[in-house]
Length: 266
Image (cartoon, rainbow, N blue to C red; front, side, top):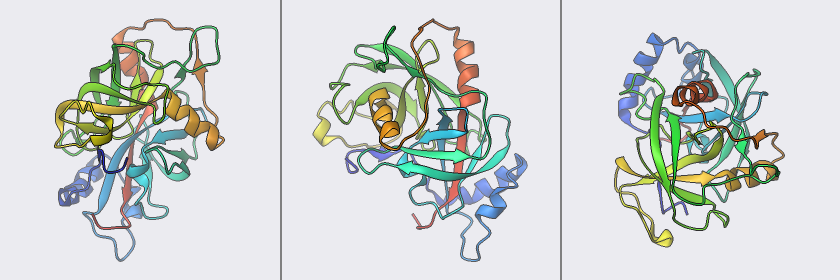
């Protein structure tokens, strides 16, 4: 599917400006990222990830970290502290990856379950949902952006590759953002976008960023990935509608900014 979507990834020579801006927001650790003699200051990628357990493990997209130089990945948590990160797993069939930092966290995403079961729940009809990510990080001064959108019926959500489409705007840097329901429970992860609704799954293509369709892997994809790689995760089956401010606060605590130096010039 790699030719069907344009990843929401930030690769731009303007990223040289990021190095200056990030110093203002205490990105001391990034000095280590760009320290090699052959590093170019503009060759930096940004993306989003979110914690899925208390061990400090995060989901993100494979394309966010696939081209990173070894030992160059840094994660900024909600307390504005930076941490070195290592890759736990990457998938070859879907655009999902897992990272880990050496710090336990108090807040993390929980898979939504069908009530009274151990089966993950995914949207089967139109559903309003919430997302938080670092869309256009430079323009937004590396602040988390909160978005409400609407998941709409499309393909069979219980068949591979377990993709939903969602009406919402997003820009480079939003890849890896969590999709939460009105209880603050996890229902998916952002991985691509298109300005067209792309009704033909076999001929998807993106033609820009902005107010458009966002494509997400639902809980089925994340669960299959987690089980295949032996990852520990959390789930919750007692659904209770939460105040939007509660959901935004939860998203703020579980979502993290990811930066790395690219090994390959884009």
